[in-house]
Each structure stands twice: as C-alpha cells, then as structure tokens.
Length: 200
Image (cartoon, rainbow, N blue to C red; front, side, top):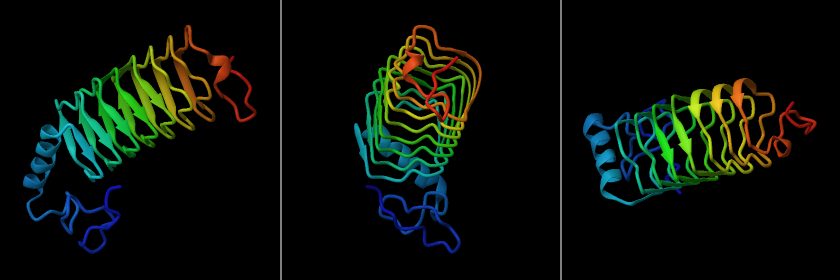
C-alpha cells in the first residue's frame, strides 16, 4: 500500500508523495510535483502504492491502465477517460468527477465516498464491492454495468440511468432517489430500505 506517513508540514494530515517528506500540495515546487505525478501516470501502465491526494486531472487519459492500492482523495477529474481501466483497492473519497467516461472498466473494492459525480458515463463495466456512500450523483449514465455488492448508502442520486444493470446486493439504503431509471435491472435483489424490502 501507499505510505501512511504524513506530510512534514505542521498541521497537514495529507500523506507524503513518492518518497518525499511532503504531500503534493506542500511540495517545495508544487506545480513541478504535480506535473511529475501526471507524467508518472502517463508513462506507466501499472500505477501502484502511490498517493496523489488533491491532484487535478483535466482531459487526461487513464485508458488501459491499472491503478492498484492508490490514494486519490480530494482529486478533481474533468473530462477524463477511464476506458478499459482496472481500479483495485483505490481511494477516491471527497473527489470530483465531471464529464468523465468509464467504458469496459473493472473497478473492485474501491471507495468514492462523499464524492461528486456529474455528467459522467460508466457503461459496460464491472463495479464490484465499491463504495459510493454519501455521494452526490447527478445526470449520469450508468447503464449496462455490474454493480454487484456496491453501496450507495445515504447518497443523493438524480437523473441517473441504471438500466440493464446487475444491482444484486447493491445498497441504496437512506439514499434520495429522483428520476432514476432501473429498467431491466434486478431491483428485487437490491436493498432500498434497512429492512431489506425491495424497491417499489
């Protein structure tokens, strides 16, 4: 896993980046450090055990890459592509995704908790055992996915297409759902109330 050592700057609880004693935000040259981080991702197919906390990505391609055990808390992703990307045991908590596409992605045991997703497309992807708890998800197309055992606990979802999805054991407990399309999805096998009663 990424290093659990905290930034040496007093009062900063962020994790250090890539062997430095500081986080990306408090690097002596934060712009160069951010550029170095993005360059590292561009050049490698396997990105593992690194912390990119607070980094911004715009029009950036993660296509075909594998992200394993990485920490991306508080990151911003604008118009990024994750086509055929593998994401495993990564943390995207408190991040922002806008206009991003995930097609043929494999996302397992990862957390997007308390993140904001808008105008994103996740299609024909596997999203297993992943956490979208407390997220705000607006105007997204999530059709043709397998969300087996993923959690949308206490999330706000509006204008979302979940058509033709496997949502077996997925949890929407305590979530606010508005204008959601579950056509051809197995809603009877998902949880929508704490008692386990089915949707509708």
